[in-house]
Image 1 (cartoon, each protein chain N blue to C red):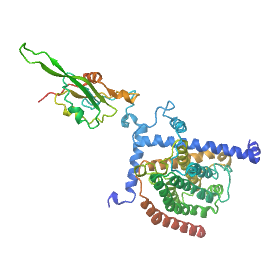
Image 2 (image 1 turned 90 degrees about the vertical axis):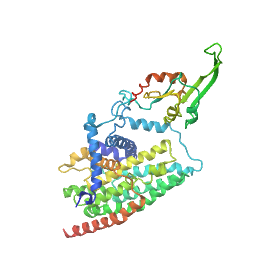
Image 3 (image 1 turned 60 degrees about the horizontal axis):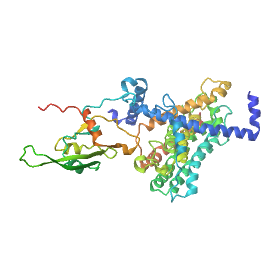
Image 4 (image 1 turned 60 degrees about the vertical axis):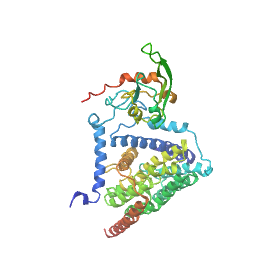
Amino acid sequence: MTSRSIPGYGLAKGMWVTLSTMFKTIFLPKKHLRTVMYPQVKETPVPRARGVIALDQEACTVCMLCARQCPDWCIYIEGHKEEVPPDKPEGRIKVRSKLDRFDIDYALCMYCGICVEVCPFDALFWSPEYEYSEYQMGDMMHDMDRLQDWLKTVPEPPELA
Amino acid sequence: MTDIFAGVMSNFWVGLGIKLGIVAGLIPVVGMIIGFAEMKLSAKMQNRVGPYYAGGRWGWAQLIADGIKFFQKEDIIPANADRQIFKIAPALVLASTVALVVVIPFGPGLAFRNLELGLFFALAISSLSTIGVLIAGWSSANKYSLIGGLRAAGQLIAYELPLVLSVVGVVVLAGTMNLTTIVEAQIAAGYPYLVLQFVGFGIFMIAALAELSRIPFDMPIAESELVMGYLTEYTGFRFLFFFLAEFANMFTMSAIAATLFLGGYWLPGMTEEQMIVAGPLILAAKVFLLIFVMIWFRWTFPRFREDQLQRIAWKVLVPLALANIAVTAILKVVI
């Protein structure tokens, strides 16, 4: 006869789990309570945590791949073409894409990371920063300068083997 | 002191005013204490902190803050709702709770009204809240509310019979339905009726859980299926009424269980004078012990299905209660 065949054994076991958890949490909070009292105590996220997306403006070519792949359509990109004088006097005039606007609306973003993966020029990165909540929903729209600032918080890429 | 008290209470209107004031104060205070205990204990059972900031320490003012918040909320009545009935329903639910407090003996001679059929009154009036729930579900003009209300009515069929039958053993032993006299019979016997009526106590508590619509029998609310059941369309202080009634009902049902089975305001070895002072505290301690068990159940067990409750009630609880009555009656006559 196993313990499972005793009627009510499962019920009693469940009751014991909740009761013992309660006593552990009340009397040994240092050992058993996992809660971090957030505003006073801050948890350090893992280095590769998906907190916020950073933009490297120099690398961006305004190809719009990220904006088109975004499931939430929360990326707004505008750009124009600029003519750059040729390197050699007899050369052709060069055309460069210039980024005018790159906004991510974090009120819409669902942190899927498709934009980071799809970027062919490594202009987008995940940063582990997470403290950017706002009182107004409109303030969740981060412009390209703010996204550029996040780049400082991006950890160094791992060494390639 | 006792003479002055008796003198004041002898005037009908003054006595009535004092009693009404005590009941009106008792229900919200008890509801808040139980609600807070539920919040805090559930947090500890789930390895959480629970309310923390409100009031400075342990979050003791959390439910006061919640209550003030509910008063600020807009009182929304759905366009298709049956307005009058929709408005009456929460008051009806709370009224049944308040009416239950009337017969509970808090000490020797300390009941708001010492009814000769107190137990009968308590069991009859406690079913009134189900009517409130049913009309709340019906008048909301919402499919979830309607299903929740009808489930509450269906649940009534399951728990009402075991609830009534389980206390018959106590009535047989005490020979009365007067709650004060039942406590006095336990004092005279020298032991609480739990000793003889443990089967009845178990059935009563299970049926009381079903009556209170608490987990594991919270099918009328069933958040995962019915949004919030019959409460779905309620907002503001009408929701607060239901909320308060739920917790105050836990108090009244536990108080009746403590009176019937645990000796009420009496502890072994106490004199009459001590019981007048300490009686309410002893009853409160027993009540909160039972409430702790209810909260403990709630955060341990998953929800039953409606048909599973019916099966338990009709195939297990009712036969057990009938056997309990038969055995109690035979032993009462033989011994």
